[in-house]
Length: 357
Image (tube, rainbow, N blue to C red; front, side, top):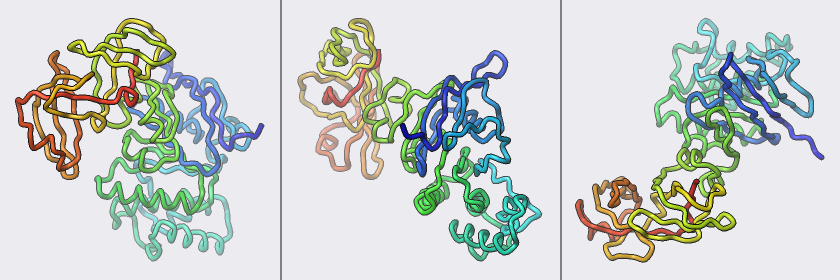
């Protein structure tokens, strides 16, 4: 059996009686871009700090190329780190900041000069060697921090919410640069964020954290199309949830009774119950809207219609008070026929939904 490049095995971290990380296990391939995604307090940054050596796990192990890292101090792990705050030395120039990891490793001066130039070129800051960080924009400073983390060619680069302090336009610009740098260098990246769009834009795979555990690992498409838990379904993409009654559950395909008595068959079911309540996921872009009644549809009232450029958001309400959002492409014929207060019908393909017991 081939060893994984980076293996996280049963990591657990307790702070007193509180367990911040619960049995996190995953394997990361060499050159992979893996993102830890989740809300604040979900355990993603704690897991990253254990990888960096800033914290010791209560249980578990971390292996790099088959060798445990736990007995290796953080400064000897040869792992790059980029933080949310740039942590640049204000009294040093850009070139001196980037050179710092090489100087403490006592590399020859000629090698330092060559590597600093290469790292600054990689982040498109060649020519900025003599500038002080205070005279640079936030995006430029983050590029300097990235160059400093990469200058000694670490096998793994850890990034903890590195773009959260930037505005949306600049954040998207640096996201593009990070993706380009990953493709050019092939460095293995573990990236922490609470921003699902950022995770989808950057990652090869995403590990979704919730309450100290990893709910699911997969590509963005896998997580969106086939969420394993209610939390993943609600956290990845836009979601509607309505309560339904489970009438039957045969081999993971359920028959559900929706509000108003509509019955739908063949819904993918997560959970083994054959009766009881379920939460049904309905993606806004997978809902159809019409004026005429439809089989296995939901009767709704139009609450609002909002133009958003290339699509239109329609807010609807079911007879029992559930609010459902519908996303239609610009120019959809149903929009010209509907107004606030009108009655309409929602329909969907049951195989494209998910229910959670």
